[in-house]
Image 1 (cartoon, helix red, strand yellow):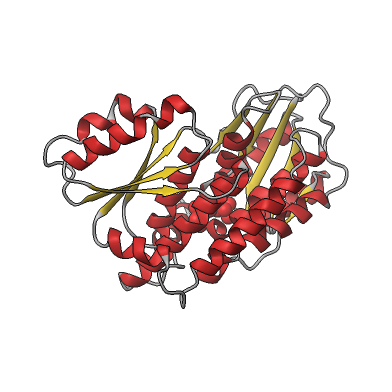
Image 2 (cartoon, helix red, strand yellow):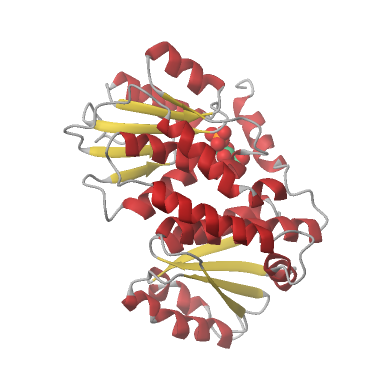
Length: 336
Ligand code: PA5
């Protein structure tokens, strides 16, 4: 898992090549909406796409994390079905609905029923490499696979310069997070979190999706409950919960980047102070790079490595996800 987390740059490049290699993509003319359907580690690619491109897309992009395709999806909609395994029930249900309604579909997967059904119906497939230790560890493939395809369709601006910068930033960071490296910031963060409950904050947009990713990586790799929220929204509710003494046993990790809206950026110091006064310990982490892609993925890599080191510190193998496997087995089992 650690090797995969630190190999994110190579994965992004491979995913992008897979996306760009797809021919006969749907026509993007008169498109009225985009829906990215996917669950868990595969759905997160949709969250990242929306956060990265919502200010540059001519049509709305919705992320669907359930079995029901929104009513607005029809012939003028692009539906991206994202499932690393290709066997996720909710994503397959959306694929079927999109197929019935005549939506323009692109599948992003390494195989399974999604690839099979796409082949049968002539739906273009971004064919991702298999072998990642779980869908959450395939974010580079999933995000850049989808990105390569939608770039080819002319929906997003050229990606290659940002990808190049992202690769450089991630390769440098991976060197610092290597297990043998002294002063490793991810090991330091993992030791600091320890047995406490982590609450991760980020600014609406890429900060917020990075915070959610930290939460899910802490859940799945470190095997701990963790929570994420977004500024400015948390200043309108959560901040009241940081009342006297309530923060004991919590840590707040604030993910920051240079592209935050100035009105949101100025909320961080006072929000952090309120959490500290309630007994929580806090740390600020700064994203690296100039492009939004480099910034968000540098936060992702640091969070991923922190979660893996914390899992190991707590005596867990970060890779298995027994609770998810158990739920899937129960739900896929014979009806009583
Ligand atoms: O982290 C995980 O393994 C899960 O969140 C999966 O991503 C989720 O269950 C969906 O599976 P898939 O990504 O294969 O569609």
